[in-house]
Amino acid sequence: QGMVCHETYKDSENNWISPDEIETINGKKYLIKDKNKEIVVGPSESMSKSKKNTIDPETMIKQYGADSVRWFILSDSPPEKDIQWSDSGVVSASKFLQKIWNLNQLVLNKDDTIGNKKIEKLFENQIDLFIFKIDKAINNFQMNVAIAQFYEVYRYLSDSIKKEINNKIFIECLIKILKLMIPFTPHLAHECLTNL
Image (cartoon, rainbow, N blue to C red; front, side, top):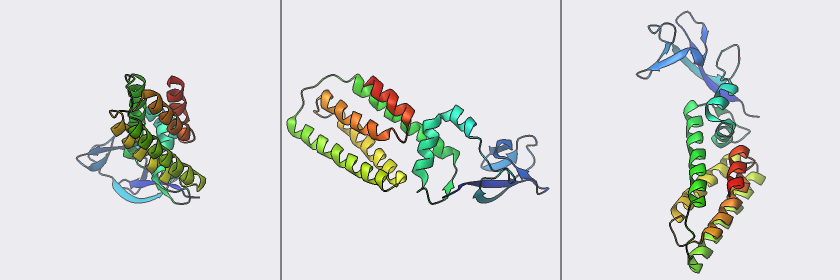
C-alpha cells in the first residue's frame, strides 16, 4: 500500500514544525508566530506525528468537503504508490467537482431542443465509449485512470451542450456518468442524480 507523503519542516534549532504553523510570504516559508524565522524545508516523507508533517483530514473536509478530498487522493496516483499531499491538489479537485455541479444545473435549465438524430447517435456512442473506459479502469483498480476519463467526459459534455441534442438524451447520458461517479464522490453524485 502506498503512503500519504508531505514535506517536512524544521526551524533553525532543528525542531520539527507542523504545516499549520507555517506561513508563505513571497514564496518563502516562515513561522507564523515569529515572521523573521525562516523554515528549512526537508524532503517529502510519509506523514507521521513525530515529524509533525500531518494534515488533519477533518480540517480539509470542513474546508473543501469529503468528496473533494477523496477525489484528490484517488486521482493523484495508483493505490500501490505513495501519494504526495498537496493543498492545491485538493483545491483543484474541489473546483472540478463544482464544474460538475454547474454542468448538472445547466442541463436542468436547458431548453428542450429538437435533436439531430445523427449528432445524437454520435453523442451516445461517445458516452458509451467513455463508460466502457471508466468501467475497465475501475475493474483494474486504476482509480487515477478512471478519474482522468471523467475529466475527458466532462470536457466532452461541456462542448456538446450547445449541439442539437435532445435534452432527454443528454440527461440520460449524464445520469449514466454520474452513476459511475458514485464510488468516487458519493455526496455530489447522489445530489446531482436526485435533481435529475
